[in-house]
Image (spheres, rainbow, N blue to C red):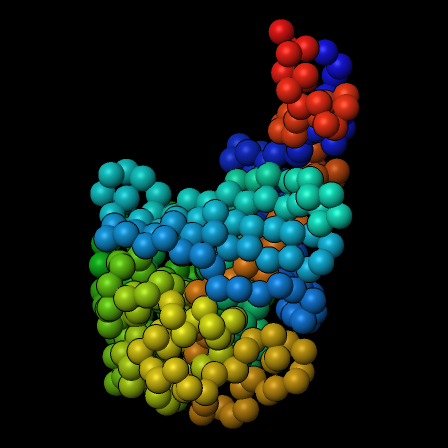
Amino acid sequence: MKAPSKQAFVPFVSVANMMKIVLHLGVERMMADLVQEIEDDFRRWGAFDKTPRVASHSDVGVIELMPTSDGETYGFKYVNGHPSNMKKGLQTVTAFGLLADVQTGYPILLSEMTILTALRTAATSAMAAKWLAPKGARVMALIGNGAQAEFQALAFKAICGIEEVRLFDIDPAATGKCVTNLQGRGITLTPCQSPQEAIEGAQIITTVTADKQYATILTDNMVGAGVHINGVGGDCPGKTELHRDILLRSSIFVEYPPQTRVEGEIQQLASDHPVTELWQVITGAVAGRTSSSQVTLFDSVGFAIEDFAALRYIHGKLAETGMFEQLDMIADPDEPRDLFGMILRSA
């Protein structure tokens, strides 16, 4: 049996190697790099195939595929969301992703994406705030201190210059975990006893809770003029964090309306309620924040182009870091038509 050809091998970034990459490059550098990659892809929005994620819902969670292509490279992410997993000692969100060459259909990268999704979600949040938050914002309220919290805090520090993060979670242990992990990172950390206390003095409010239900994390009377809201936790049908009245007085920015209207905070509104696509702000086609009193809301649900950008970024770092394995993943017979013969000759 001949040795597999180079095309039979696919670079694979395991969880262990992804952690090494993060530590090697540094979290804040990766956040800045990912923002640049995602912005670059948003600027060429028209080049991509776009479709809402393909979701399989159950009474305990959701399993989704998120595909896209720019005509040269195809990518997809597999991701789940199971809020009750935490009670079992499991992650509520896990993911992996793949890139392939459109010309041949051959995979060119397979990667873990549980960690990478946390990084790209936070980078996308901070990217949106860079365009939408009030100038000079230095204080952020972070409501929900679970697995995504530290990534959000560091992304907003690196991209937006946030200096203080005011933390609240219904579980004080989650806040304590977050404080411990962020110590020495150059951020003032203020644990709070309620959402109301957390948003005092904050110019940016980030909600990133996990319960799969219609929830009211923020009520209308809690949100003053001029703030930017980063709504991350509401990301599937039947799951929201903000009172409807907040939406009605906010300028709402989204990734891909056909997906966000089903999954985001705006599922609470009429299907024709006006929203602005974030890529239009980044390209300069549409204004973002237009006044100091404006309430802006980034209704973030996550979109495939962001994952595509993150996977391309990791693929581009393989030569620099060397932190990957080669998987013998593609059957490669001597004669392309003789797949069965390849099996026989392997004995």
